[in-house]
Structures are given as structure tokens and as C-alpha cells.
Length: 267
Ligand SMILES: O=C(O)c1ccccc1NCC(=O)[C@H](O)[C@H](O)COP(=O)(O)O
Image (tube, rainbow, N blue to C red):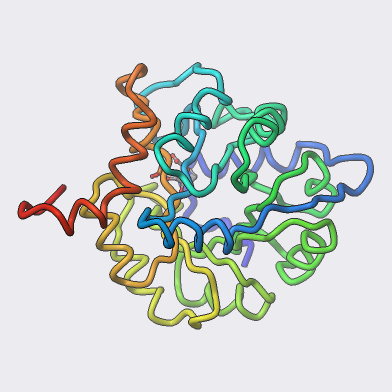
């Protein structure tokens, strides 16, 4: 992996910044909340398992939300989110490790650290229940998956195509996210998940990431094998700024229940 060919300029800039960021001084020791348990709990009470993302801004966002990350995360849980993703990348996404720590103290669902972790010391910046590793950018994926597990994290390995899926499986990944956003044009295409998901073994926890914006999208991803969905923009609604994050989350977590009770196409 670790190919920088055909990367969008914003992604090349994100990687450059990631290489400069220091790691922690000593290994963290996490007592992680289980994502599979949180997914099972949502399924049991009829909610779609959604990992809602606290993403103040991004290279593709229309604006920035300055709301308190804790208030956003609490509203997401109120809307039925099974887990929270918190951007810790500071220079392109407006995130911080401190925001993640505050969110994890405030909610009782699993919290994902969303960042561009490239080397082992960068695992030790902050405790989280789940930790994102992007297959394309990590040189020693197997080593970093193992190092994350040694610290107690549940690694979530992000892939974009079948080759990266195979690499994630060889590295021992048990939780895999298929990112619908390509890192060359930053365009989203839900067909990405649909083309990769049939090749994932049943015992993998499979997450559809990016570009899910409506209940119809939720159902489409679930029908093609998504155990959970990672959703940022449609919940944060950067353009509106003051939109109702709990309601935005609920619209997606209730997508399957509303489909059963409604005659319309429910988008
Ligand atoms: O979100 C971006 O603009 C972005 C740009 C460059 C690299 C990564 C980017 N996003 C990272 C993500 O994985 C998403 O935040 C996450 O999957 C949620 O996506 P969405 O629901 O489409 O906001």
C-alpha cells in the first residue's frame, strides 16, 4: 500500500501534516467498549447501527461548525447513534485529541479516533475504543494492527477496493470500513461499498463509510451487507450550521423502522 499516486492535493497535504505530528511518550492502555456489542444492541431494539462523526470541517465540507464536540456527541447518542467517531486531525478537519477525550468521558458508547495514523508512536496520542488505520497509507499494516490491539484498541481498517480488502484481511483486521470516498477526486460513490462488500467474510464487522445522506442510502448499504454505517456530513450539516444533529441522526438510525411503516420511498 502506501501509494501517493493520484491523491487529491488536499489528501497529499493531510498526509504531509500527519508525518510531522509527534506521537505519544508512552504506550496507552485502553479498556475498550465493544463495537460489535454496540451494534448488537442497536439491532436488538430496531435501530440501524450508525457511527456518527463529530467532524467540525473537512476538505469537502461547505463550512465549519464550532459547536462544543460534547454537545454534538450527546445529541448524536440521543438520536440513536451506536458509536461516535471523533476527528482528531487538527489542520484539515478542525479536530483534536482533547475533543475526543471529552467526548469519551461524556458518552457511554464506543468512540472511534478518526485520524491519519502512520506510525506506532502516533497510536499513543489519546485513548479511544476504536482506532482508524487506512490501508492505503500504512506501510506495515499487520504490525500496526497488532500494535493497536496490544494497547487495547479495536482497529478499524479502512479500504477502498478489493486489493486493499485482501491486505486488511491478511493483516488480521476484524473490523473493516469500505470508504465510498475516493482519495483522488474526493468523490463519493456508494457503488464502491457494493462492489467490495460481497468479498468480505461473514465474520468481519463491515462498515460503509462516507456519502450516506438519506434513509434510502442507509437501506441500500444495509441491503448489500453493511453491519454499520459511518456518517459525518449528513449529520453535521456544515452548511446549515445550527441544524438539529439529534434529528439528523435519528432520521438515519430509524431508516429501517420507518421503511416498514411507510408507503413512500422514504428518502
Ligand atoms: O470528508 C472529507 O472531506 C475527506 C477528505 C479527504 C480525506 C478524507 C475525508 N473524510 C474522511 C472520512 O472518512 C469521512 O469523514 C467519513 O467517512 C464520513 O464521511 P461523510 O459522511 O461523507 O462525511
